[in-house]
Length: 458
Ligand SMILES: Cc1ncc(COP(=O)(O)O)c(C=O)c1O
View 1: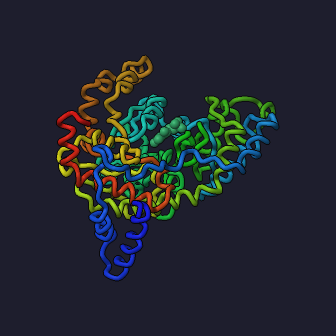
View 2: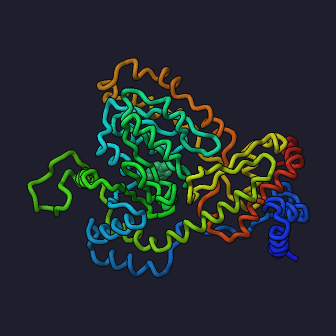
View 3: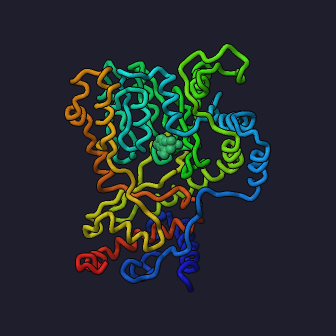
């Protein structure tokens, strides 16, 4: 019996065991584990998953004609297709309005600026995010203030947020990181108490749900990215969403050179507010539009596979699956995270664990590095704009850094976090078992791997 058939058969047998004895899934899965022998691939064994993974983005032949039609029409500038994409995206989220923007970063900038965030303000943000969340704050001339994360959930910790509120705080920018909802109930009540604006960075969390509400629609506004790797990929693209019509009108004007919402070029008296051009084009919108009918199904598959995989790996020594808040009714795992403790792996460095996973055919990365320590914030503080607006004390980088220590984030980034990409969760359920079995095999043979590593053989 080949390994895959064996796995299928034993999983079936295991399912019976589960139903009849109520043994928890990891234990039942442990029965298979013992039966499956073989060294890890990094030290000469067979790869567990040599067959590859679903690619990304997923293109369907049925999309061809629709995109070609837009290209052949010569109507490439923002018009009906973009409006339809916005309407349908808003409908899917259950929000009044969506406005497409050239990318997620500028969606954040647009939403922050039109919420009134400006030079002199502070915005509280998580350090565990892509740099764009923080760059957006700096682009408004505001100061990012970091609230450390909760290591169990990878999300900004509301307890830390509250500690960072000052008289200069204007907004909170929670990021639903890796496709999992942040702790929105607590964040919204802190915002209410201190009269702060909340802009959700949902750039990684298309269709994730908190209390059955789509993330991005809970606070004052939400921002999405449609960059190539995202769960709704266009290459580049983004959106701001909100129920606040007046705010959305302003966002529209800002994204379109300050021209009033609802007007066409040449129809009115001109530009009435500061604006820029961050419009999306028609063919980009069509690339998004054609994928919408498949979004829900894909999100559900990631959620189901993600939960299954969390269950499979939770019993492996040294592995801690991410904790989701009880209000999370759907996570969409733009990245599937877990925490790695090398002590349970005979001291195996995380990089070596990643190499061992790669050898099994499971592409794995360590994820973010501590972004608040990167030089860009110092560069902003040294800029003419910041020096004109802020006092010397406010721009004292050393005291800023001392006040913005995030030890929980550092631990996750530097030692613990492991990610896999969202498209891997679109594979079959048996592939989730392959992932879990790979981790388990590496853990069981950690001593053998480390001996070879120490001898310089791998
Ligand atoms: C959390 C987060 N915020 C913002 C962005 C910015 O989006 P974009 O790359 O579309 O500008 C990204 C994209 O990678 C992101 O992951």
